[in-house]
Length: 116
Length: 112
Image (cartoon, rainbow over all chains, first blue to last red; front, top):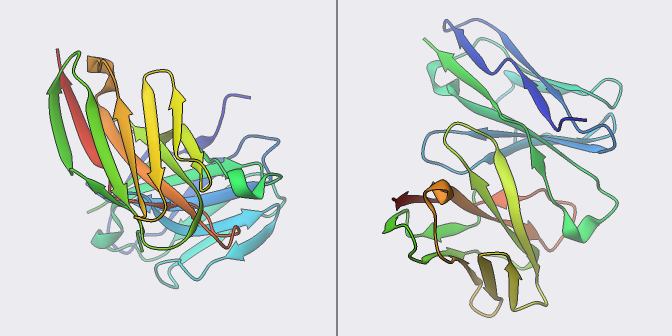
């Protein structure tokens, strides 16, 4: 296992197009998280899953954002009708939630989105 | 929303010097963590300190936590050019089921 994998690493799209990012977590981790990071800021939480259940999605930025984890393994984050303000780094992380009070996230390298 | 606020926002030091970064947070926490991010990359976990601990060491890193002041500091001793990165504090709020909440980070530059 080589850690958390994200694909693509960089996506350039035109405003109004849909984009999808994929995240493959560490195989034994049951929780998967999506964060967004804009330039000069810290990661901003979007949503997370425990196995295939999406436990929190109220922080998704708008109804144009959706995430799935259909079989409790990989996850996808889709942004519909992209806007220039969606340009950011989208980070995926995973964790083993057996230890609730010592939650440590392992991050992927991120998917950078540029909306023209 | 971002709970933690790091200070300073940017820090530039010479190789061999110590670097100190501070973090303040707002709500009660289970633990506080520090992460490092090299430019354009993902974050890497450095160290975790529990709410009932006051100080923790890991190699050249020393973290302190003052829950009465809701603040933490990260000290990197004998800094190296390879320590150049952004450093973020992150808190696990007391509810225990809320994911990590990150601050805005401190950008550290270590000049050789």
